[in-house]
Length: 340
Image 1 (cartoon, rainbow, N blue to C red):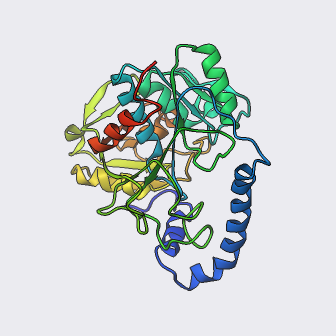
Image 2 (cartoon, rainbow, N blue to C red; image 1 turned 90 degrees about the horizontal axis):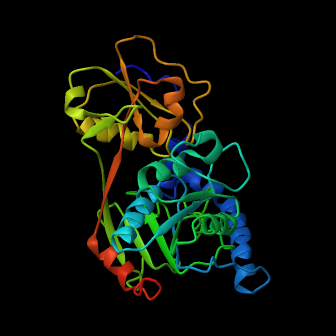
């Protein structure tokens, strides 16, 4: 396999440090103690009432994580929205819109530019068909969404577990297959905040629930797998099986790019080269690899931005299977058990 055009972002080195309490992690522990004190104070300001959390006024679900990097929040958000729709509810999605060039509150539609709304909100708008609004302050996104779509009767916030300014009814914490790593806070470990912490449920993709999770937190397994097809810019489906005989250049601008590459290889695809780019990379300076015969293949999240530079790239959607118990838990929650 040829060398990648870009040698990652250092995230793999950090993740190696975060897997154990090694010398590098211990050297960073004093900074983690400072981070923990500051983040803990921020949370307590809301607990003490010095800062006020504002509720949108309708049932609100926050899907987030306590670890840095990709945990699979967006696919869980989409799966949650699809289930709510199957219940006869009318959901909307709110998000910060991380990585966008704008700072205002705005709607993300299927026609939006990823630079203006963020790649994940654009993906959710296209995949879900429900209203999606972005704002740094999620309550502003919620208010704008409800003003534009007053029939909305439940909100799902993509990310925001640590955004204490938004009051919520249900908190879902998502973990990838590395769990809590070494169990230390940033930058000595992967944790944004200490675990365990109270949540409605935890979703995990490892063999076992995250270490230290008490029995009082319901845990449900999730399984991620690629769709059996890729999609073109025009929306046409190309079976992955038809790509097995040609060389591919796979790229991913996500927190865990090697996971995407591994899933492609598991589909018996021949990756002539791989390219790991920074999460939320804008592709403005990206150069297509030399050789006209090589087919570029990417994640669905990256597609909208990459297609501006490489219109013939193929994007592979990610499918998520969630234990039915998770949806049963949502259905039984007091704020959702009686649809309005």
